[in-house]
Length: 77
Image 1 (cartoon, helix red, strand yellow):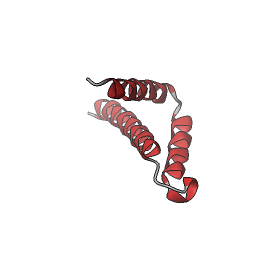
Image 2 (cartoon, one colour; image 1 turned 135 degrees about the vertical axis):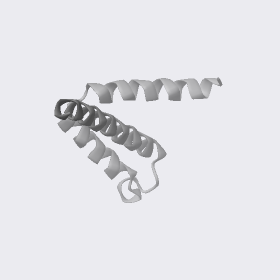
Image 3 (cartoon, one colour; image 1 turned 90 degrees about the horizontal axis):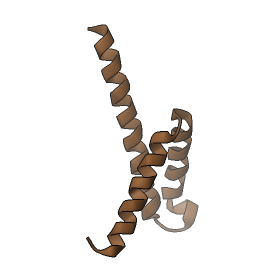
Image 4 (cartoon, one colour; image 1 turned 90 degrees about the vertical axis):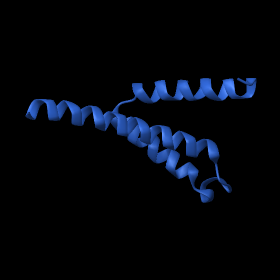
């Protein structure tokens, strides 16, 4: 793997770990902030890094919701 991608991958893994450790409230707030930063009006240009961060935050929320749903469905069957 080229060196320039190693740093990005490490950053992404670190971001995912930080997102996992956030409370639901903090994760939602973080996602809203990332969404704001994705808007060109916020920075004057499209911000690819913020878009990646937003997608990771959304992915973590989906993961948590799937976990909750699987726990709920086990108890109701």
